Image 1 (cartoon, rainbow, N blue to C red):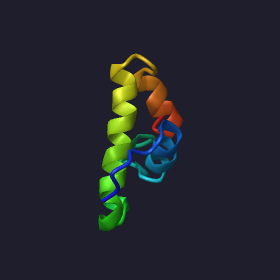
Image 2: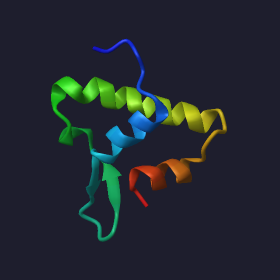
Image 3: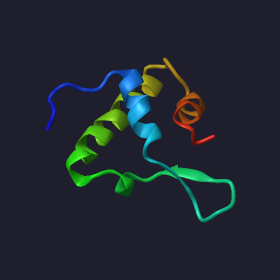
Image 4: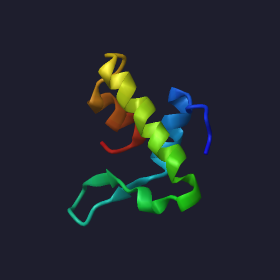
Length: 71
């Protein structure tokens, strides 16, 4: 497990890889099952980085969703 958190840009790039279309038409979601188990911790860290930026008011959740390709 990596001790260093990914940067915001690295977190966005990682999370883009875990976006999947839902069974519901035109809806997407994050699916960490798309990620190899040995890399899942890094993706969880990426989620923490992006959510921290929302809590700090640096980005809105809608902006994060757009950046990772959910909307």
